[in-house]
Image 1 (cartoon, rainbow, N blue to C red):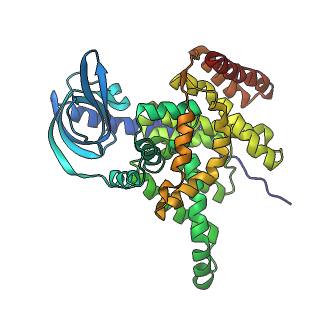
Image 2: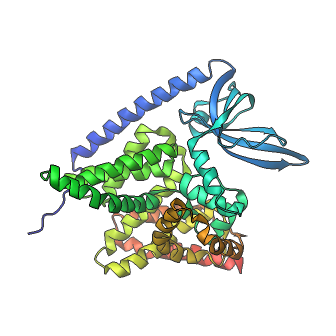
Image 3: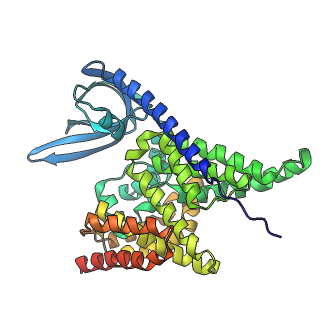
Length: 419
């Protein structure tokens, strides 16, 4: 007889968990507010931050540099500098920050501030050194940026981002749960034969699968720390950790309730995630997968593999076009790119590790040259309608046909606008 896995919460347990999350959120917001008041005690604040991204911008006749910075406490903000400012990306700076008009909400969301650079530290971050090493293996700067984003979550130029967005493959380069899943598989495949022999000889009473997953989690957490806790990856790692705990205790993992629990816990512990676009897009992708499995998990695995990629593509299309507005006739082929990415990611990872990182540069260059980004317009109310129908479909199956009509309408509208 097959044992059924139980759900995580039922009845009054849900209210108890919700209360716990509110208490955690209140505590974390209190800590954040204390840090905010300390930063804004005087009109000028001195702090140290790393330059995450730097690019040139033009307004009228004037040219200037824009810098996106992040402190070790997770504070993110923008500032500007003269057009002749040298490349500081990856460097840590000591700055005087104007905080006289800074509100608490802006402090949490990320803000613009006038600054004065008082010191530039010559030593760059480990992540930037790795990104530079990867870039040195590629002759084309655009390809170097693509691999930098793929492995170190480095920023890309607007031109590259626009090309990738028009091809519908931006999500493949924004490190998230997809990448974490592939990395988990690779790590466990490597560790399994080594640890299994050791475990059988010295402590056969232990469950090797559990130990392997714990070791994998430690390695993934080190990678997360290396990337400075990218929001989409925080969501993925949090869900993986909670999923492991639930699975180990015989509780159903792939459920809307498990996703909700993960999201609520992460938002309670890191309130800044409320304002992270990458975090919410990552949540949306997982939600789409779970909604598909809720109604179509009985299909053959081969059919599931193909249709789930089509489903997620269509489900994420309205919000993607509304936010980024870039589309091309090659955009629907992102379904094929997503399916092949499961092989592409470990292949290029191993290729870079053995010094053959430029092996597929020609293919990627041809793909970029094929892109012809065009601007399309998707109206907000249509996106809100799709989100409402998607949430309703969790409880009402008969909403699915209407949901499919809406997302198909968005797709047809995008194709019509560029033809």
